[in-house]
Length: 168
Image 1 (tube, rainbow, N blue to C red):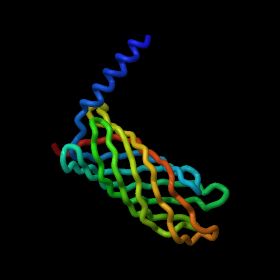
Image 2 (cartoon, helix red, strand yellow; image 1 turned 90 degrees about the vertical axis):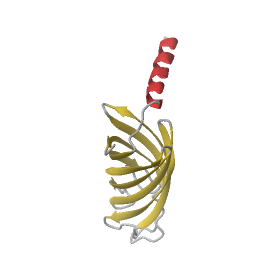
Image 3 (cartoon, rainbow, N blue to C red; image 1 turned 45 degrees about the vertical axis):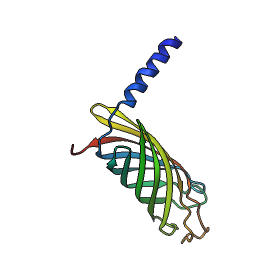
């Protein structure tokens, strides 16, 4: 049983490592974002990748996620506008991102800048591509309109989506 499992793992890994990700692509994704002072948020987004050189790419991202405020805070809608620089290592990638976060909701924090570090994997899926990412977001708006004071919105999150190649 162990040799068969090892062989299957090697075949899948070889297939993933040889996948050539598109140089230019649109990627719709599902998002989850946890934070220190709020419940977990869920949402959707879209990213656009621009390949600079084979191992370096830039991305522009726009998304929305909804967070239930729980017992302490009002519910919150977050609209991140993000820019990312990423390095590719085979089918794995990682990088840094920065964004401007627009908030909507009762007792919302002030719109704020934030940053994140992330890592992910991309692979072939039915002639398209798929990806999964994990990230740590640092977002602590300094002033809020909220009666309860400042909220620390930093936390771990993730994205999973489909990559749609454009151009050649």
